[in-house]
Length: 340
Figure 1: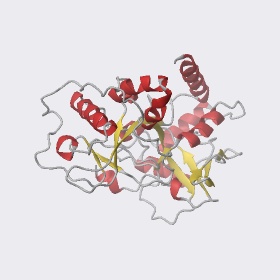
Figure 2: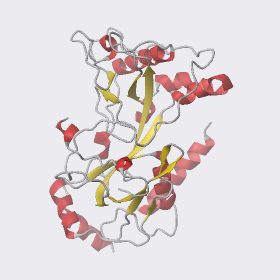
Figure 3: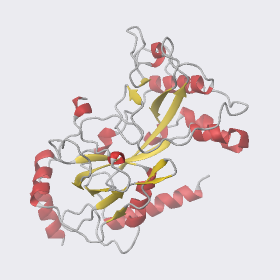
Figure 4: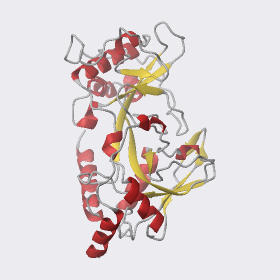
């Protein structure tokens, strides 16, 4: 992982670039649901490095698109949502965003554009050092955190603050992060979350846990990169969603599906499609079908189940397995001491 100075430089470069451009693990209880804490309470987290040493940051960014349908073919007529990965997360062209971008040039289509725009969240790992939730602690105390943009912006701003002298994931001189929940209107608000004022060291129990269980490889908790067949299914679902059609599990069930929907035995599977290139996306609609709904609250329950693993979050995601780190906590501790 990069040093704090290197992280600051890369964050600055990313901001500059942005301003210049127009498995069994499903039940491992590793995701810490901070969005379930009571209003007026806080949980204290201690972030750890990514097991992937090629990652400059101690988090990975996840980009998903929500496709809504008025119901399911042959099922109940109630709205369902399917989450699909955005191709730009992998440096590829996203068929949905390619279609949606021009909509923002037309004021009558802006709401529809926002509805189908990618939603970001950020995956971290670490310890919960102060937990207000009444939950059964998992065997592995190294949890995963799915962080919303609101909280992430607080984390990022502090990393750029020159008063922060050491990277927060440092085992000897790191910093805890306190997630505080209040309410703004009808939605959860985390704007009062902040870093601890004093740095602290991991204790012997925490170091032993790192040695025993290893750090999470955060990239493993991103959804699988879509194939040509997956992009074809995403394009078809996008067209159907914009046109107000029902979700068809016989067509798309083995690619991406709403939570709880069964897949017919004869549904096509990835790799068996006759079309290998992504389908042409829908032409822009003349006007928004309906006003965009309010943003999903942080407390929302998972609404999507996908064929490709995605990680659970305040904004739904599924989980995948993480390999253990090869380096022991003692080895890392010695390296930190030698650098000092």
